[in-house]
Length: 86
Image (cartoon, rainbow, N blue to C red; front, side, top):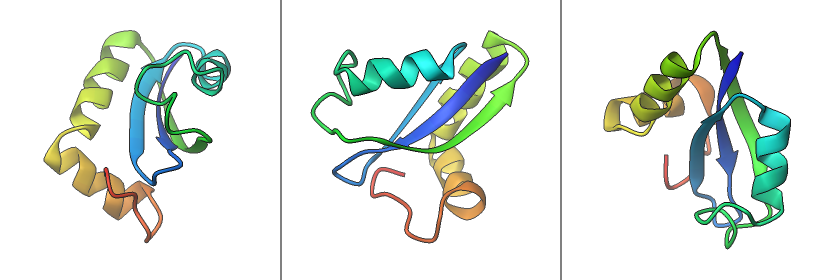
């Protein structure tokens, strides 16, 4: 099982990533092991989507980072107060 996830950062931006171990990956983010998020702590897990394989997870992650993917996130997944980066 793979996961695509969204983190709300302290500066109210949205980080989107994918992993096969969500718990481990969140711990890595919180231990400042990820370049993009280490200066944006604390982080809050906002959503995650489980998918069956890595290829689908990567494709979904990339899609959610596009303009139309961000629009769907704002409309369907994120709260009314979507982060600036979404």
